[in-house]
Image (cartoon, rainbow, N blue to C red):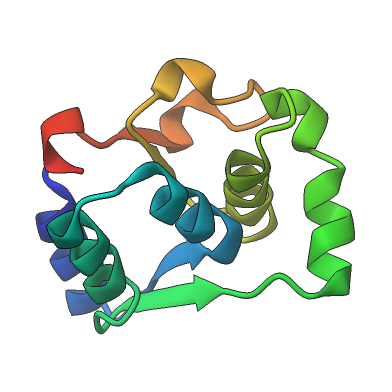
Length: 114
């Protein structure tokens, strides 16, 4: 399933896809082309997408899982959010998902869809 299809399905069910702020920040640092940056901007504003904040409480909690992802702060925020919300963990790198996330909650996003 492609990202767009997934977002539509989730929104159609009246649910939300969480987009951790630090993961979004990390994505912006990894893309340099105008179109890719524009897609990130659109992603964050789509109906059914909730940008997850990182206040001081969330930061402390997300930091607790940073060691599970070798200090990758964007991934730590995403892992913490998935655990905190009992949500699916969407990734293009499922092999890097820490074992604290049940395998049936890890869903792969095809690399050509990012």
